[in-house]
Image (cartoon, rainbow, N blue to C red; front, side, top):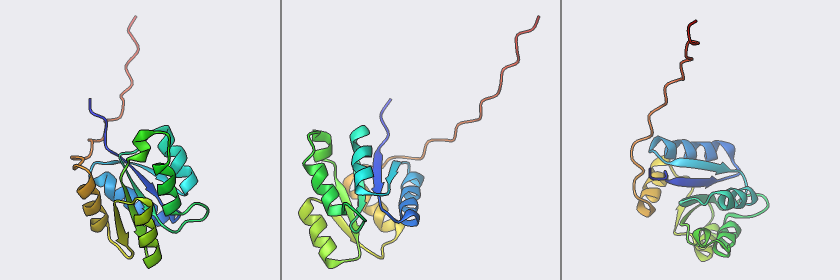
Length: 143
């Protein structure tokens, strides 16, 4: 069985993080959300993603610093994971690209722009997995 496409979504803004994750999940991608660069590094080390969507301006580690940390990782899978940067700032765009982002989307952006960027870098994930039916308890064996 083929492993699902995993996307790490990193943003300190919870509503934006959830919006991006939900849009990706509706397209069949599996998402892992992180609220900081530090949390993202931990999640990526645990199970490397196929792609990262990273906000530029976050407390602590910036998006550009996160991308540089991924590129410097001893794990080759993390060094080559494509990253999409999100920013509202000119300086953020240039820093994200210099750090190694494959693409940068300028805010305000919409879900469709994020999905198009993801699909430029990854093959489509296919339809979402069907919801599993709830388990029905078995009747105990008769006497």
